[in-house]
Image 1 (tube, one colour):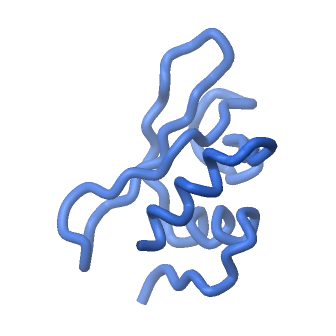
Image 2 (cartoon, one colour):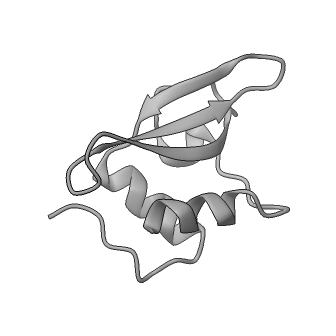
Length: 83
């Protein structure tokens, strides 16, 4: 449910998070387009799909600190990531 809420917020006008905002290894200025769950919902991997201007999408593994930062930026303080 948290991933769906993040993606809803990321799809809203003006909701922009860049690779630099999150400190992930993606092209500078690439924007987070969506978060994708892979594997078991109870213990899966969460990937961020970033899009760079004029480039292809880049897939980056998101860690707990990244997910917390995304939730804070999207004003979703009730999200809990990690153990």
